[in-house]
Amino acid sequence: MNEIAIIGGGVGGLTLARILQVNGIAATLYERDSSSDVRRLGGQLDLRERDGQYALRAAGLIDEFRARSRPEGDAVKLYDKRGTCLLDDTADDQTGGHPEISRVALRDMLVESLDQTSIVWGRKATGVQFGDGRPEVLFADGSTVAADLVVGADGAWSAVRPALSSAQPQYTGIANVELIIHDAPVSHPESVEFVGAGTMCCFADGQGVITQLNGDGTIRIYASIREDSHWLDELAEQNIEQVKADLRERFDGWTPQILRLFSEASGHFMCRPIFALPVQHEWERVPGVTLLGDAAHLMSPFAGHGANLALLDAAELAASITEHVGDLERALTVYESALFPRSAEHAAETASNLDLFHGPDAAAGLVGMFTDMRATA
Image (cartoon, rainbow, N blue to C red):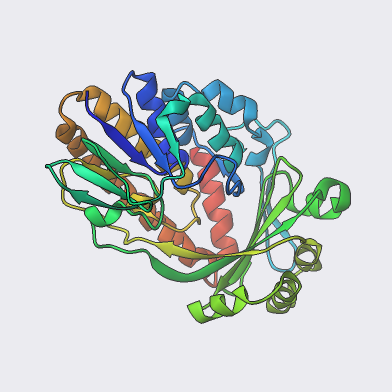
């Protein structure tokens, strides 16, 4: 039996471990966090039928997903900067074609589905080397693990990727400043009415605001700003009141409903610079090593592909391993031959959307994009 080491306990790595387990194939997952209770961060994810939900079916978790998801979170509202509603896609009967689930709830579901002895917590990978012909994972504590297959599911700054590729994520020039409104339905009902049950978008003047109403009653606000990296360093030195004042100034002249969102936020803020790998990121086949998710095809969030593609990658890799038991190289060749064009297609779309969202015709482009998405769905 081949030894499989999965590096990274995000949704992609966990899904791969789960589908392999369902198919009777053992794998060990190594995660840098000390437990699943660390870094319980992240907003809502809309999992689509053709990729995210497809993977959860393969994992035998689709019913559990539906029980934890929010079909109403599929709603979308689009505004112009003056507050005119351009699109209100809030059906009376949300059937949940793209039901939302919090990243935390999805990760919990996947962790709980696994044989707990297959997860090794508190092991941060730092690289991969080749010793006796097999890849060997190096960890920050000085230990090593050799395996027949090492899968890098360890995100944007993957420690596994350098074994395959010299590509490094590049800053796109766009950063999202994340704020949170707590207990919004009780304390800020007017803002809940404005943003709706799911996602709200408002883009103009090369910048924009995206919000999500989460199942825990919080509104997550993402102010999307085009700035250089020096501004990010300066922002990190500010407190939340300074950041809120900066955003109100930057969005001066926009509808008061947008400015009110900034004022109502409390607690902490986070600055998330948007990085991306090259659209056509590929690598030559290296025996015993591959990548999935952001480690393979990091892209901006402006098409909602990130988590969906990570889950799809996991399902496709697991299927190829299962089909080609005893021939890992064949399994990886088949997997990567489909991974590369799929990744490039979605990365190109996402890069195009980044320009669209921050371009002169953002409002019209957004309406057209969401209308087309709904028609296709």
